[in-house]
Image 1 (spheres, rainbow, N blue to C red):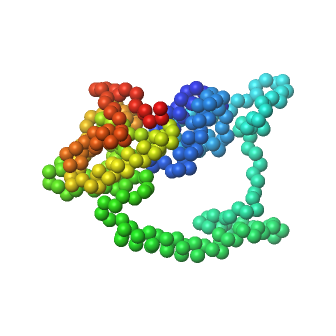
Image 2: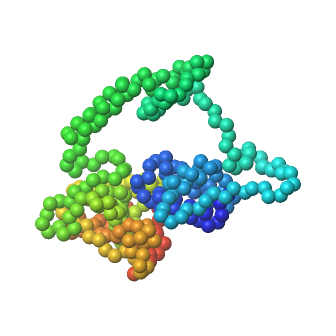
Image 3: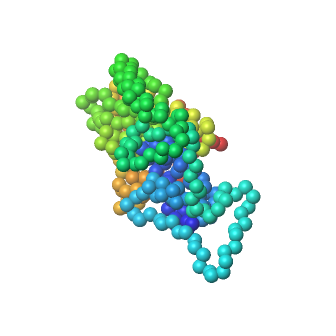
Length: 306
């Protein structure tokens, strides 16, 4: 079982990992489910050994992470069966592994090497769908190569210039070659108020806050978050000059550059043709002002869900 310190630790680390756009879709889904479970049950949260191992791996940091504590029976008296409420998820102890059931339609991983020393059972039934992966491995590689080739040709002929696609993921942007643009740099757009420089530095644009598109509180915020990201891409793509300048974050002294300051991100400003992108997004209703003090910030404004 988890203690209050463990629950607080995992909730904090899950929030930090979800802020990092490098997490995959299934990792985000798993961490979101675990955080909802901890928000609902707190210290009574029950997880299996496999779930706990995955949770530790996804939220690992340099500091020591919590260990799973299994409650054991210390009394010599016979153990009384536990009365579970109706509709309870677990039918046995929280860390007892249920027997694995094999599906007759399970497809073998085509990239997993076979063990040459394994003795096959001659009486084991053969499943009709298991041979698909092995038999079609060559065809699969050919189809994959064709898809990659077609995608490369399509990006070569249709991906240039300032064309705007419908994807909501990060996009690569190169600032215009102007000798007066001191903050000239290559960067990608993460969302409406966050960019990533070519050297890997994540920069939170200051002075405004746009709706969240990765963890929205409602559908309206998700729609506006995607629109703000697309609008920022339009402003950068249509600008003659861009200027990226780093500024000091509003954090406590001694925390600059650490995870305790703005989740480890840097702070900066982005100007297109001499205009701050934050002011443009605010004037178009895609952002709200968010001004921080010298060593801290007020609660993040998110008025899009009413």
